[in-house]
Length: 394
Ligand SMILES: [Mn+2]
Image 1 (cartoon, protein in one colour):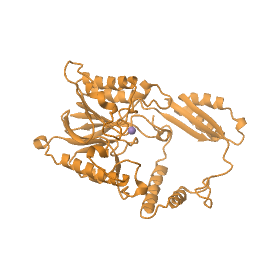
Image 2 (cartoon, rainbow, N blue to C red; image 1 turned 180 degrees about the horizontal axis):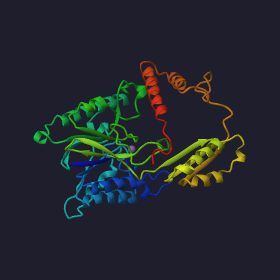
Image 3 (cartoon, rainbow, N blue to C red; image 1 turned 90 degrees about the horizontal axis):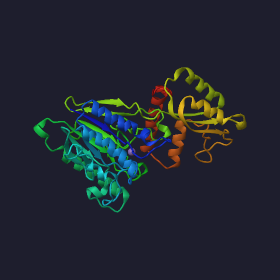
């Protein structure tokens, strides 16, 4: 039996000047995949909606897609994300109406929603431990300081997840997965100390989740995909330009997961260059690109800004993108910023030195200082050696 798992479709976000149907296209693509491949279960790992008070249009679009699943007899489970729920226990989640979907064949809806505390659903032939965005109110935690609230909620969530995963499996052999919307930490950085608390997020150590009796873990919240995070359906800021987007297909018999790349996620192009470098980049596109980017923007850096025609650049970009968001022409900065008065200017400082200077300026001390620097170096090396190019995503 197969399950499709998506995360963070953020219905109603409409970023990059797209229209709603373009924005929802990857979500719709995952629904179509489920229908065509006879999938039994469809799960959204949180942030179905972008706003806690979706518009009537937003509801129409999200519920419309879920109704397609219902019509085809595919069960679905929607898990509350931080965009769907308020912090207090009596706030109404954006997902309140989901269980009203369906009855398209006269029966009950095929849909379920996970609100509040983590709970187990027997759905689509799979045991799903569903973890909505952890809020202290749902776990009955009360404390004076934010730090204690977060620490105690983290412990309460983990204890509750352990108790759910200790329940014997049906017939001792069914498949059980954990699907949730949460922040996780891993490795040497435990995110315990106040300098590294992620705002008011409850951060769960991934090692504790791995120790649960589950066959696979699928999370929403962080929009870039990795081993645990499914990743959002769409890029949500310009930093996502080269990030691949996909949904997960879990096979509960083989206990394997396949990643299916979205074909309809927005393709973004962002260029910051001198006029000469910009022309060189566009020249390479002329022979190479077979598909247009969806949205492009450029920032042209030039000492004599009056010699640059932004209209002409907009027109050239238009050959390679359906929509040009902005063309900015700026002079190179005459002064360069520094972290503090006596530091090396930002234009000549090495990234390592810059991070070290910044950590020092914030009073971050060992072991977090050393661990942060070594993690940064490892990531920087990985990025440099991968050398992503703008055309890779097509
Ligand atoms: Mn999200």
